[in-house]
Amino acid sequence: MAEVDPYEALIKLAAADADIASVTGGRVAMRHRYGQQTGDWSQTAASLVLLPAGGLQRTDVDIYEFQVEARCYGDTPYLAGTVLRALRDWTRNVAKSTVAVVEGTALVYYAIIASNARLIIDDDVRAGEGMPAYLVQLNAAVYGATV
Amino acid sequence: MAQNTPYGHLVGTATIYVAPLTAGAAEAEPDVNVSDPTSGTNFVVLGETDGDQVIQRTGALTFFSDNDHTGPRKAVRPEEGMTVRATLVNLTLEQRAYALSLASSAVTSDAGPPAIKQLPNKRGYYPTVYTLLVKGTVHSPYGALPAQFYIPMGVFDGEPSETYAKDGRPGLEFIYTALEDTAQSSGDEFGHLTAQTA
Image (cartoon, rainbow over all chains, first blue to last red; front, side, top):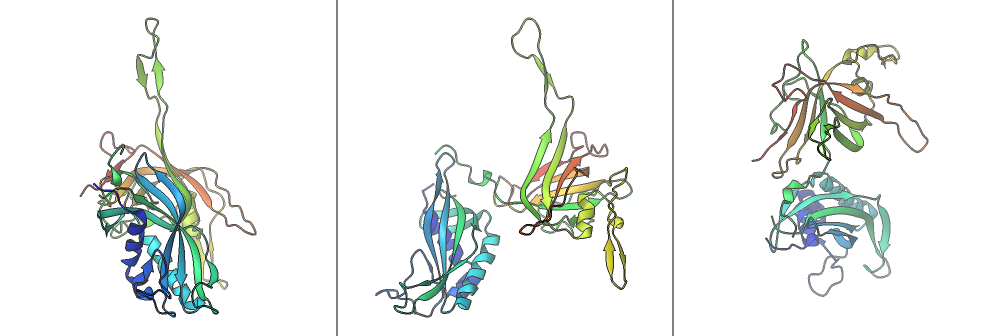
């Protein structure tokens, strides 16, 4: 038994989904890599970024119940929408799902989209033009230790 | 860490299946590991529900005490029951017929034109008895495995109302109440909960 990183578990579980992997080309991470010096993502490539956004720690039962801001990036709003739909479809299948993490195997109880999407143009990407991204809130729960 | 039972925490909703009796007998329980209980049986999906799905065991204890003791000395359960409550939001006439404990044959159709289906508003003296199966794909506390409540006989109770709104949708809140099925084994008259372990 070892403590797990709940965000690592959620991100790796999402990245393991075939549809999400297909529409994002495997670009699923906690922070985007557009314009980075190393591991740069193409300025037109779609991606899914899952940012921790608060929540609860149920220490008595060793469960993380947390929110994540999901940013579905795409070259156009339409392409950002394909990432959003893949994300939405994936959340339907998350139910006591296990995933390999650094410490061993993590258990993700659920990941549920808790808000409708908001379209933003992220000006931190593609200076002067911005990059479309759909924002949704995910509610998720992960067991705090390996199983 | 207080405990180490990660799979004992149950999440997610269940799918509710309903089956009519056959010659007064309850529909047999499918194996818990059957992914589609409708295959080869008379079970059909009751329909999408919204909100909480509540499975309740009713029947408060009656306690007896005597003059020699301050606390109760004996307890009995003079009555007991079991209910399943949820709100049906798939409101086809066929699904409504179940939630109103009408026979599925209560829905009639006419080719028209216009083609129509009809469901009577009057529910009648005798509610139709159904077998219920409440199945969760990961509701077993022993792993990411299924579990199911099987209730051999019961009726859809309650006085459901349909509320229409400009920014809302109606749902039929039903209370399925178990009836004792004396054809079942002793102790299983209300059915049982089955959880897969491996």
